[in-house]
Image 1 (cartoon, rainbow, N blue to C red):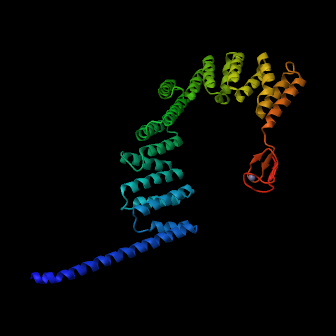
Image 2: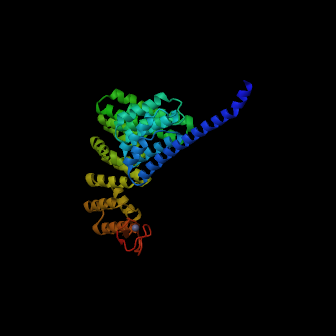
Image 3: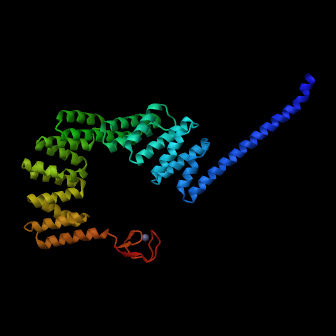
Length: 398
Ligand SMILES: [Zn+2]
């Protein structure tokens, strides 16, 4: 019996070897078929036939780590090209596969959320990101910060400010854990949350819910006290309650902190100053702000006030001093010219013309005289060939 077994041993070895070889050949054949399938899909992509490529990929039988990554990128690139419907089909197909591991599934889910967002289907996008957040608290592949950031963007679009605050908070906390608290990120989140609270406060103010406004103001103070929007909002609250002196002061604090706000707040500032019959004080404050910041908008608004409500010696001095020295923009020069015209008793015509000419000359010094018609590049001297796009004979007067 033992001899027979010994005799059968080589035969068993041979059978085993043959079976494994057959399996190897079968696997190789299968691999070749898959590769052929894959190459076919890539060829369709290269020959700009995305629908055919899509069909090949969607019917691709087996997905492994590498092909899953490729499909993922294929879907993303469809979305980046604005072909959201195709991107959705690829990512939905990926998620439906049963043999994806959790890393691949989470990545595909995140991409699907981005597809829905790009397609303007914000409800669906929110659903996908919320699910990712709920099911993957310790997700290594898609960071919680990335998911919260996407949710934040959605809530900004839908103007759901409290949800936007929560999402930003979640982003801030999870981002801190991962990268440490970089000052820029921390500041940015604070400023965003302050904006969202201010949006809520603006809404409450419009509805006359002043108690809610007070609560929200306190929240902004707690998050980002330096917010210039907070200062503006405090001015709006006073303005809304017709406490014009306080409104004027609050607005001026905001403008002193950031003079760019003047264009936005000018109408309310002017109305507040008129209501308390104190345009002069507003002019004085703006004049001192201009001397400090040299902001051209402040200069323009000063001239507008002077033209409407009467000039002062200080404004005349400012015009005579600044016009020949400062490089003003064309709107400021125009406003100055108008001002001089309407105040000829202060600055005579000859002097006025001299000032405006000097100011225009300052302005023209920095203006390029020529421009390439092909690419728009501007230059001071005429050239045969554009230095930017290298085209010949495309230079014309700017
Ligand atoms: Zn050019």
